[in-house]
Length: 400
Ligand code: PLP
Image 1 (cartoon, rainbow, N blue to C red):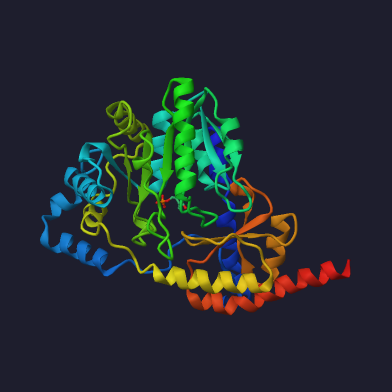
Image 2 (cartoon, rainbow, N blue to C red):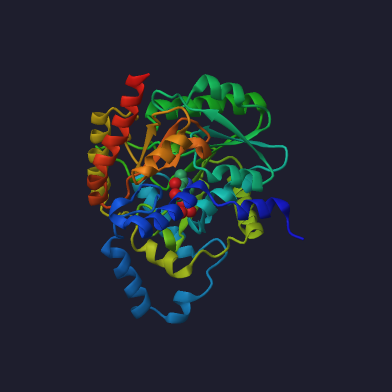
């Protein structure tokens, strides 16, 4: 006998994986040059040289036993202190190692944070469209995911809708800016309004409502757009960070949770994070990579390649008549499907070799996510297919 819930979770492949697998199969059939896969969010920029240098130095100059040994469950104390020092320098805060918990990427940061603050009977809010795994993380903690649609004209928060859904049972709200799947960055105005609303609701209900900020794309923004650092505006923030995208090391599984000093009963919250890490088996994140990233703080892969891709694809799609909110960050375009059902639109695009993800699993219908963290050349070669797809739909509309 197995757990039915886990069986279902494990045997159903995510839509994104399905598309990725389809792309590989199609490439074998018709040649890779005719398949334009925009399904995955796997960084295409190489990791900076500093990652290689840090790894080589650790492997050749440090004691091999200590480099590979277990760290404490919450992570190596020197690594955590280095991260705290880095954040303090950047944001003028006063964090320390004992509020940082090293994890295997943002996925684990989110899982432990949600489990630490919410359980059976509790509600956690996500703004749709949202990262597909939020539902899994929230439900695995025994809590209920409450979905609040964003404003469709700019994908900022719809405050009327949000206010209605915050109840006595709300324990946390998950936000992700820059966003996967929309590429939208929350403006300072949105952040300030959100923080004011949550403060008001905390007072009304007499308990903390945690703002869990999912930040794997914090550095990936273009044109000097500012990403407000939420702990400066809201005390009960829990930061879930990952080095996967900024350093292009997604397979190495390294990130952290920060429980900032402002959090009410922060020591207790941090202890609950440690408890959740223990319960889920997320203890002692990979030792070598903990130490490597501590030597690369403040560095990123060359993010200009994503800006080039964004400009190229966004401008071309605008010209062909697609609708899409201008994305200030991350490496995704969220484009309105050219027919009501995004799944049918994707199936049609596939016939022209274009692979992208229908929005349904992001909690929002009628759109597709296009990941542009791909070689620039793939984008250039795919443009005639995008153009033809739009023309085909236009021709049909004109016939009706
Ligand atoms: N959150 C968002 C919004 C993401 O896009 C991703 C990965 O794509 C994650 C979390 C998980 O990140 P990681 O690979 O660091 O676990």
